[in-house]
Length: 82
Image (cartoon, rainbow, N blue to C red; front, side, top):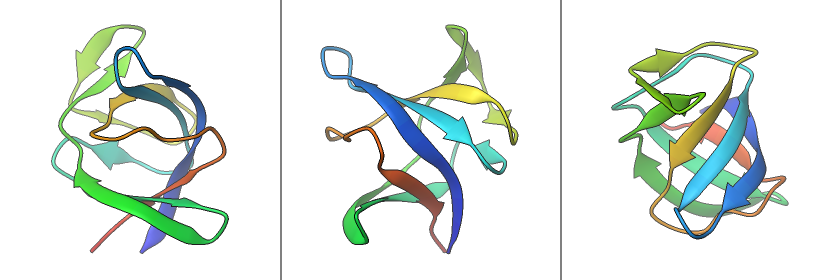
């Protein structure tokens, strides 16, 4: 398991986390959200957007919108699972 990014903002009305990437992330990847060393939840990436455009993957340094199943607080770290 390795870190792919960090949540900087969360839009609760639309269920989207804004994530600054430290590594490549693609649709279909399994990810885990961790906050304060505590596992929050795991899910499969279903949708990634950059500047409101849907993309299949994004790379280190990009800021993405990530649709999440549950609320994620800013500061949560995103890890690629498995």
